[in-house]
Length: 522
Image 1 (cartoon, rainbow, N blue to C red):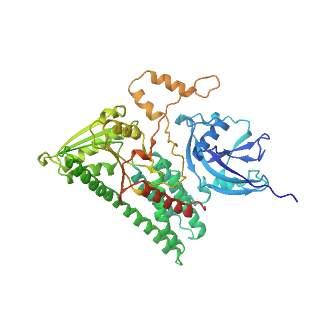
Image 2 (image 1 turned 135 degrees about the vertical axis):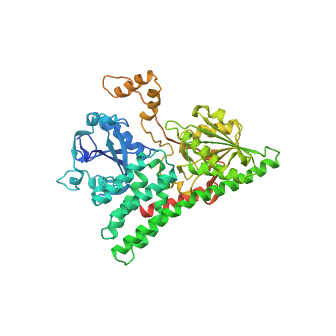
Image 3 (image 1 turned 180 degrees about the horizontal axis):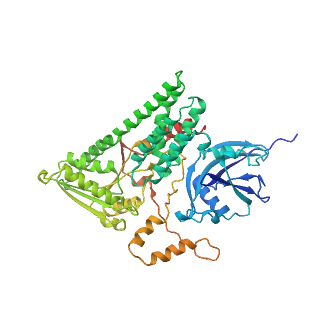
């Protein structure tokens, strides 16, 4: 008997397309190499160096012509591995769910779906009817892949509704910072657990962990690292209760109690960051005075909106022996969160420092494009973080990287990242070039409201893009976040004090251990 050849390992995405309460499945053609004539989601292998989410978008466009105009990414499932000896493959499946946008949201509906040579036909199915059986005719582990993005099949109706509501709240909240969004996610999780009143056993615990995964990955994934870390801190306490020999009602009440405890503990994080920032600035100010620099003023540049940064600036100013505070804020288009930040700082300053206090504030809002002018003469650039990679790269509101480059070139100011440690991501969690694009409407809104006639020409071109009789492709990008390289940051200031990249790397490896334990076995 000839020896069996070594298994070929393939890492692939499985992309499920949903519309209302139905899922699209595609009949694979005889031209494909594996699983010809089987029902399957959109699927394909990852290219070298490509992230799963980028591969999902690419495969979806290649096989159906659908783009972000017609669909939105709504859920990411936990990847898993299985072997199919019949095709000599070890598959690593990365499941995704996309929602088809109806016409009233600017999409073209199902008319936009144009299948390529890899498929014969496609149809809508009730996801509850999908099975892993020869009779159904799906690719191997089709139901297993689907249930990782369609959690409704594993949860009771009320728990499922609570999870859907929590995800919707996270997706549509573009004002709250990462810390606030994480608290919203944990509160949503409490709502889910409050509805999961079945027997608390191994299957219950698996479903509970899957709900936590979705709140960190399928809500606002670009801000989901902090949420993931919050759940990793919560999971050990919950796991201990799940395995105790107690009545179901007692377990359930204790589980809700431990979630409340973690929610309450989160309230201390901003105060500790503010304290660390104040200590750092006092040391910097002392050094500047020793060098003969200005000892009576402080100039800070920041962008977007962060209550932690706002309070850190004002609290630290109150504790320093200086009279003049110069705060410059980039407006942060397209939602102009910088304007909200400026208003908030002004109100807080007027409350804390009456005219008789001898303290004064110069507050300036700059357009994003004038960042080089705004950088002149600043002492510090303060940035938040929505995610920090193992190497120390920082993901933050778009405009942060140009601000860093301008500050370093124009004023040689220090770049400080004020962030909770829960923003640190595990190694290998995703390509640092993944960007969240939120569609053109927010960007184009100010064009249209401003009466720019050319806006209609661009809008017409957007509508016509991908039509067969058009040879021009037009896009309007609305990127919310970007990555800042490790060399840009002079100090990470968190609830544990001032950290360097070595401490960030250690934290990242701790996150990976926790994620592997509680989620990768699902």
